[in-house]
Length: 501
Image (cartoon, rainbow, N blue to C red; front, side):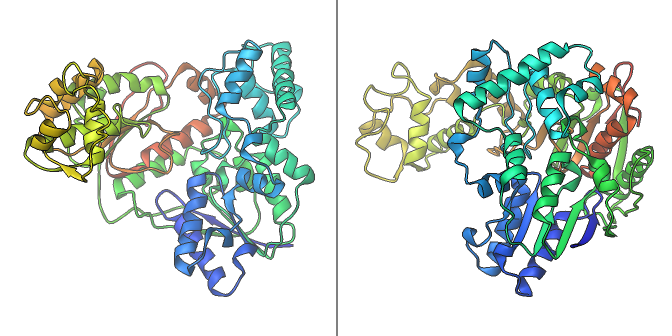
């Protein structure tokens, strides 16, 4: 039997960093790199571990073949190719073929294999598999009053028929196939990161790949288990036997945030008790009756979080009107290409030289009616690396100079134009870095910011979930609160049934 060591890391205590240090210790004592496996819930965590080991010990990627997500591990061991894996385009084809509306599709590529669509039937079919349950058992023991058993069964059969016909595998198929027929690699040590997010099917895979190893390290935090809706089996971590270490010093949360967070998580009934300390900084805690009373113009980075996407819509409208550059779900509301082109145009008009790729980018936002001569859009005759205004006007078809970007860039849409004008009126600097990120709490997991604004409203579905299992929703808001490095702003519920902090 392998020796199991469990590392529990409260928010900001560096559990992944601790795990990576143990990887380094194994490599330093001479454990062959290909005999070490580092499996994680997300691709980001797995690649971070691999890249750190490569840099520290001067290794190449091929020396660390087992630093992967579990789905990637199964993919690699089974010898599959990308053409055999269900893609978003395949799901769209399936939806058309069987007359289903899937809406947006998250195929699991970057999110630990969490597969979601806007179609509840397909979601529930996959959820049953992640939980290792027969579909009928899952249906009979879940609150699925809005759908019929026959509709669910038809959806399951339709999806399986499509995959069989196309000879495709989805992410759940990979693990199921690996469990039934995949080889067990020769490993000595296995590291498992983000263990609180693993589902029952993934835990079975862990059992398989660790059956002959000497040592297993399990890292996670049951208090941050917020993916039960996607099949995560936090009870497995809570009840797991083994030598347990609790990391007790947070390098993120100030004392006032740590104190509040402990009050929140203490309401969870089923958990592994643990205590931890905040940083030496006191921090600030503010309560607000309305989100408008939070001044997002303050310096520092901001993370604005809500339980559900639509609860962020009004915040986004307000932020746009204020002319604040922001991201939503880590994506800018305008393209980075446009931001860079605007900056390059301003530098060009200030008499500076700009590089050829910047010139081409500028030209792409100009029409032949306003900004450039026909035939010069791609600068086919350009033979230099840098250009200034006079050269572009004389030799490369530029018709306008000295005009504001919003006049010269006539191909930019009105919505983007108005937003960037508002940003300029607010901030005359050329800083194109967004300090504000709007996100669901689930989307912000693992992130942090100087300032956190936490909306406590719940959707109707989340309210119903709270009534069934308050522990899960409590963990969600615990995760939200613990993203703050300095100041935490709690916005009181604007409607009946919010989460009370």
